[in-house]
Amino acid sequence: MSPPVTSSQSIASSVSGVLLGSTASQRKRMVMEHTVEDPDTCSKSKSNTISEVYDIDEAVIGQGGFGSVRRATLRAAPTVVRAVKTVWKRNLKAESFVRVEINILRRLDHPCICRLLETFEDEKAIYLVLEFIDGRELFDEILELGCFNEKQAAAVMRQVFSALQYCHARKVMHRDMKPDNIMLQRPTVSRTPSASQQLEVKLIDFGLAVISSRGVRGRTGSAVCGSADYLSPEARNGTCLPASDVWSAGMILHALLVGCLPHWTKGPEIILDLDTERYKCVSPQAKDLLRGLLEVDPTKRLDAAAAAAHPWSQGLAKVPGDLTPTLASFVSFHRSAKLRERRSLHWPCSSLASS
Image 1 (cartoon, rainbow, N blue to C red):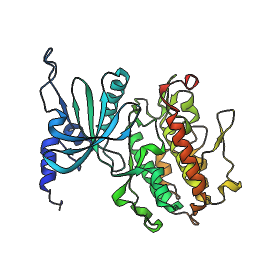
Image 2 (cartoon, rainbow, N blue to C red):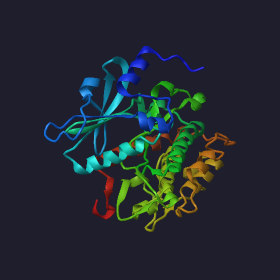
Image 3 (tube, rainbow, N blue to C red):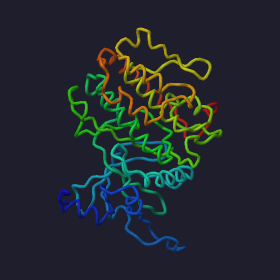
Image 4 (cartoon, rainbow, N blue to C red):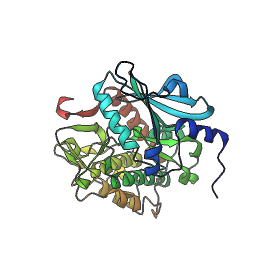
């Protein structure tokens, strides 16, 4: 029997079109779109403005290349909390990207992906009302924990792989996989290593995502999208594949296990010598998964389904490594990554050579 719907949930569903328990096809029909009528052209239907439905905080809780995110509460039910992403129309490129993002998010309904609940639009901006995630970015949460082991890392990465598997089955490529876009939901995150299964992942920011009509081949072109540190060799050359997302997930896993990223050679390869002292705390099963994820040839690389089913991802490592000794390296890496991010080492569809 389904649990009873509370009054606030009922109000939220009727006022703001929220249907959290629905299937993807149902949600595609249920995600409400509110637009305000243009008095000159009358080209859009009259509907509620976002300020009539939500109280939006002034403080920015998230900032991306194309928009800012603020916390909001539903006026009809103040206990219902949402996140509102605002994208201003004065930036035509941002407007184009956000319309693609909306189209993609309307297709997705997965427990490890932040849900789009409804959209608003007026003459100045487009507003995405999203599931509110009360938590931290992945790496920030690890620093807060103060200790970390492979069972926790496996619990996180299994959910990341599951979300990517779901996206790729629907021909969606994220194209900006990085630690900043993996959130850990705060209420279910345990501060003790013994409860790693409680780590709840949410994949966010589909602003650079695309839908490929060509299946696993993805898209090829001169555009380079994503964050430099996590780009696959083929993505650096303008080829976008589902396997490119998997490579980025592999780089995230490497940083989790070792506290740094592998070094690049002058060619399109990385130095991944897993027998060196750097990897002494990493289990054999984790090393095997890293080899499969960081395979330079995308046709030989593990796909998201295989990565999710890997024994390490399933928590079956015979000797799970204690990653606490790598935390000092991890802290240093995380701080330097934040500094690089502030210097804009991020390409929203541009050439690496021109950055």
